[in-house]
Image (cartoon, rainbow, N blue to C red; front, side):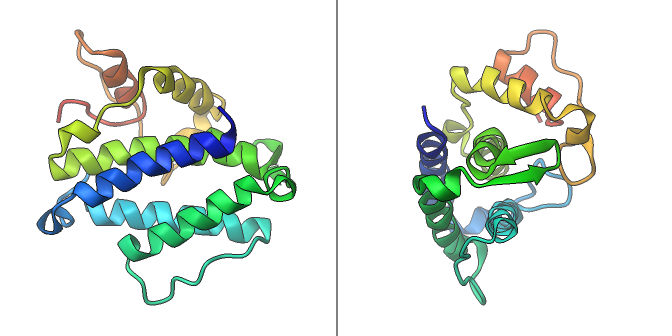
Length: 183
């Protein structure tokens, strides 16, 4: 799967979850300490908008919009940039060395959509949206491991939590990523 296709796949799953969340559940506490489910959407919007800006790409105007209204605009701008070979292949010096916009989205922002989809689903009680596709579990583990201990920096991924002895592959991944999979 190409970076653009993977991003769109995960963004579509994220969209389906957002559409399923009842209005009265957006204030529910998420597994991200101190954040509500709506705050998680805001985080996704802000981080993708920030990446577009750091690349010097056009950013959608979201002034005055809440996270739910801003997300489709930021999602479309990210997808458009991935569909443009010149922008997808745009090289820059990333935190871990030389990389491209497309690789950054593929290795971090797509995985971010998967993890935060789980966070929102867990917060809002929509368990049918919590499943991480089995082929993505290993991909996420490999990509995140490439970040080394930097992934544990404040504001990125929390410290690993113990996984239950009978944990599934998904639960072991979530525990490694700082989530209590059974909370």
